[in-house]
Amino acid sequence: MKIVFLDAATLGKSDISAFKEFGEVISYDLTKKEDVLKNIADASVIVVNKVIINEEIMQNAKNLKLILVSATGTNNIDLQAAKRLNISVKNVAGYSTNSVVQHTFALLFSFLNHITYYNDFTKNKKWCDSNIFCDFSRRTSDLNGKNYGIIGLGNIGKKVASIASCFGANVFYTSLSGQNNNSDYKQVSLEYLLKNSDIISIHSPLNEKSKNLITKKEFDLMKDESIILNLGRGMIINEADLAKAIDNKNIKAGLDVLEYEPMDKNNPLFNIKNKENLIITPHIAWASIQSVDRLIAMMVENLKEFLKEQ
Image (cartoon, rainbow, N blue to C red):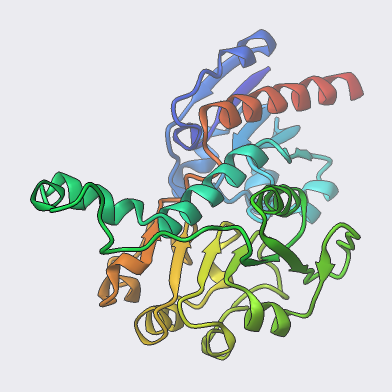
């Protein structure tokens, strides 16, 4: 069996040696569109994250029997074609819940406690010039008592809700699919959530209901100085409208996902005036060491499961 990793760089150079138990392993850091067929010409198994695998590729990869997706989403695979061609597709789910939840609160507390501001404050020796032992140029704020609205109450959203509740936040949520009914928390409309939340946390997948969900109309409903966190998908928030809301309503935004990744150099978020009100991380919420190790282990199990089915 020949196993080919087409974009192993997306695994952060983690150890993939466990796959050698099953056959020859070939690993490419990245694969250009025009090189996909050449790289998987005689592969039985391919491992992909962002590489697009369409019907033409599958038809010409004569030995291909299994596609292991090193992610939860399978939107880069033509699933119908794979079914017609009797090619199995196996993804992974739930491997990064703890990592994403932790990153959600890292972004939130950076705002509530003005971490970035005070880090710069001390390193620029401003504290050295103070007449008292602490500084009040920025006031920190408790999560306790704040209204915490969650968009998307899947596994990640539920864990965020649980932790926010432990801090004393008033948690409510909206379910775009209508399928996540949870009696532990109050379910509200999106409009209610936007109007009443001090903090809005997005943990929804990207689909026809969530795409471009938060635009100028929605930002106009939000409280001035509220915080919005997007740990779902970039296209859920309209970035041009967000840029205006940050400057016009003093809204704070913590983003780990953007419409285009890597980030476009012409993104309007680069031009905001209130730069303290924006924190962007480069899609790393999922990628703790433990999460990636868990992801690889789950892909190995998917391969074992496939072999048992043969």
